[in-house]
Length: 114
Length: 117
Image (cartoon, rainbow over all chains, first blue to last red; front, top):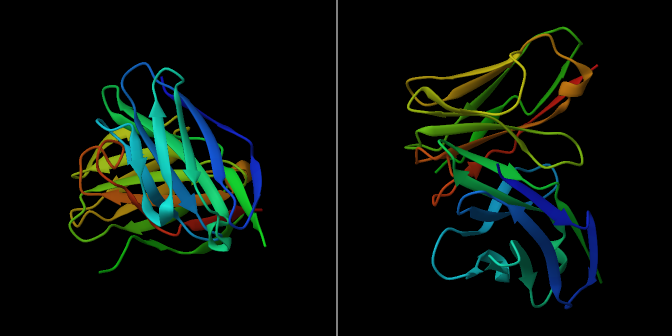
């Protein structure tokens, strides 16, 4: 079975500061890992995903994440926060266990202070 | 091109009633997945359909059902509504059998906000 834990339901950073959103996963088979962003009253938008190959994944809007198998982590980072980054971020995991199902974490709300 | 469209955007129902939510996937996408997002939580997988067949089911009671039509649009039905069914219901479409859970992307609609009173 797969599961996702996002550390910190709320994260607050100053504009221009580093953004670090933490995600740990559990999977009995090689996982696919995703980060999604959700703006108020909207659906989810894919930021980036890890499937196979390079463990450092670059996504949209300057975000990137590193897959660390030994730590079962897939933390999301951005070097310099922008006001427009304020949103809810979800880490998700899926795997082929006889069928595909995406499991989402509880989410981390990112606040960006001017 | 139109994205994933869901209707209605908002809905208020009374306990015990039945509700039908609708989703039109992106043109050319054959997979539709449904998720329930309770306030303050991440989306929970309900169903995935591909080529009109159910390919996956989450841990939801039998009051929840869905179907996919020949044009790949989909309906989610919930019977005997409970207060706890109040949530944002998200539909996601994907061109692949994995429904975006593998190495292809899923595209989400803006959701239907269901309130049960």
